[in-house]
Length: 323
Image 1 (cartoon, rainbow, N blue to C red):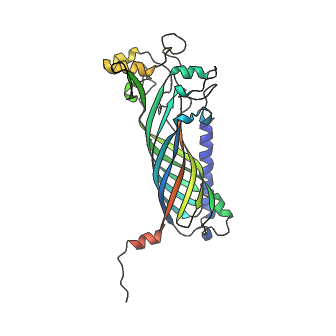
Image 2 (cartoon, one colour; image 1 turned 180 degrees about the horizontal axis):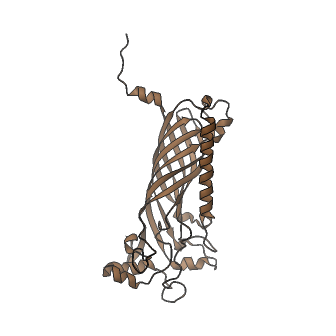
Image 3 (cartoon, one colour; image 1 turned 90 degrees about the vertical axis):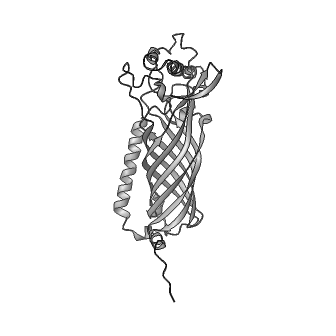
């Protein structure tokens, strides 16, 4: 359901963009010429993955979202607007995501299994994306070039790349303290080991598809403020390092140095019930491989108009003295 919805939204938005381009680019009254904006964004970032959640069977999207995992994100952008209804944005954002089975809301149902799984993670997120913005209400405006005081809803979709590095808390018996350790080098689900040939090592740099909606308010021709919600579809289930099943801990000692294998053994299965044979044995479900991880932002975007294409070109010319 989640994947088909993403596919449908992307196809519909692409078709709308194509139709608008073909039918309305000749309408001069909808464009005041190419102009540019630059600005900053700030707001919360949330994660949708395998860890934590609410009561009942684990599902995708907001039903299993734990507010405690919300982190602050920020970024900068540069956008070009060939017409009032159409924009192209280049954005660079930085934030962090996290998940924790301890946050699972337990009411005695299937969620108890996730609570007792006892896994957690955190990761910084660095992303860059390009996106198309569509402002559909421009076609209903009498004078679209008169923007001061206007409120314009919009949609956006694009493609991007992001980098992550999941870490989990390791209880160090030598210091009796919890410390954060990188999870990918531990191969917690046997990724890259010959005993699990179907589990390849995952890349820490992945593609995503940002898609969202927003509303922009123009304080003046040169200054505007937007609020937008942008969801990122990803193509990996390992942002939180959890995807498939528990592995036989002997594989860690067969392929990793002894000290690292001991940490991997612990981090792969932190359940206090792991030795009681009640669902945390090798081969038992550790995550849900049918749904990739995702993340989203809800933020404010402050934009400053830099000028038109002609103004930029003229600003690079040598000054001419007139008498």
